[in-house]
Image 1 (tube, rainbow, N blue to C red):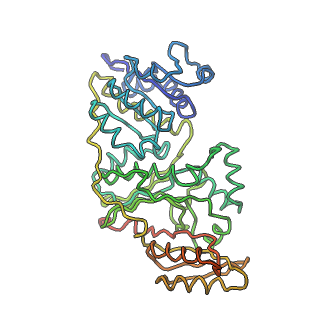
Image 2: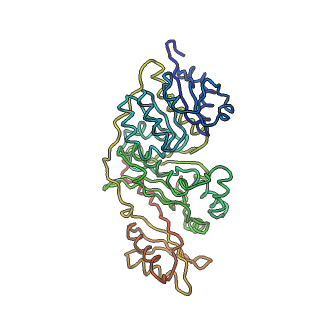
Image 3: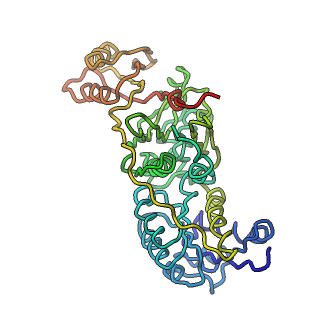
Length: 440
C-alpha cells in the first residue's frame, strides 16, 4: 500500500444473505485490496436487527448496532452499504446518507426501479455517488458495463434472464416434466423462492431490473411502472413440451428494445429458438444480452443471486468509490440523472407471433372456432398441432399485440364460448434484437 493512503471506512446496513457476504468478502480480502489496489477498507459500523447475526459473523460490540441511524450519523463512515431492500427505511437511509456527505452502494432494485431519478438527484446535489451494480444480475458486471464500457455504442437491445427463481422453475419443469406448483413448492423449500413468490413469478422483480438497465442503456428514464409485466403462473408442462416440438424453449425474459417510435420494454414468458444462447441458461443462473450498433451482440452470464456473487458486485462498487477516497480526493459526484427522452411504446403496438393453446368445450371443434375468431381480427394461423388430450396448439403469423388481445378477449368473454384459451405465449423475434448493427 502506498504511503499517505488513508483508510476508507464502510458502514453496512443489513447483515442478511448479501450483507453477510459483503462483510465476509471485505474482511477476508482486505489485505489483498491493500496490496494489489492500494485501497485500505475498514468496516467501521455494521447494522442488523439481529444481535445473533452479529455473533455469527464475529462482529465486535463496538462496531455493531441495531439502529441504522448510528451508521449514517457516524462521522467516520465514508461509504454506506444498504442491503436491507424495500422502500422504507431504505429511502431515509439514502437521503440521510447523502445529506451527511456519504456515498451509498446498494442492491435495492425495487426502490431504484421506481425512484432512481429522485435519489440520483439527491446524490448529485450532495456531491456524492449512488452506485448499484448489485441491483441487476447479481454478480454479473452489467450495470457498469452498460454505463461505461459500452457507452461508445448506441444500444439497440438489452434482453435476458434476470430472475433466477423463475428460470429455476422453468428449467426444472422442462428437464423433469413437472408442473408449476410442484416445482414452486420445491423451490420454496430449497430457498430459491420466497414464501410469497409474487415479486418473482409475476415478473415484478425482473421489471425493476430491466427498468434500471434500460434507463442506463438508452440514457432515458424508464421506471418499473413503464414495464409491461406478465408472470409464469399459467405455463404448464404441456406448453413446454409443445414448445420443444416446435424447436423452442420457454424462458422468462426481460426485454428492452429501441424502435423508431420509442422503447419497447416488457417482461413475460416467451418462446425463443432452442439454438439461442439464452435457451441454454438453466437453473438459477442469469444472462443478459446487450446489442450495440458497433459491438453487435454481447452476452453476460453468471449467478444472479446468492451471498458471494451479489457481494462481489457490492464490493466492486465500494472499491470504485474507495480508490480516490483512499488517495485523499473525492470520487466524482453522481452524473446528471436521466430524464424521459424517449417515448415508451404501448405493449399493444408490439408485433410478434403467438402460441395459443385451445381446449375444446364439449363437442365443438376448438381449432375451427379459434381460427374463426382470429380471422375476424385479421390474424393468420401458420401452424396447428392437435395434442393428445384433444386440445390444439396454434402458432400465428406476426400480429399486432392489440389485435391478439382483442381476439383473446372475444374468445374468453363471450357467453357460451365454444372453446377455452388455456394459455397464450409470445414467440420472440430474436432476429429483431440485432437490427441496426453496423456491418463489419
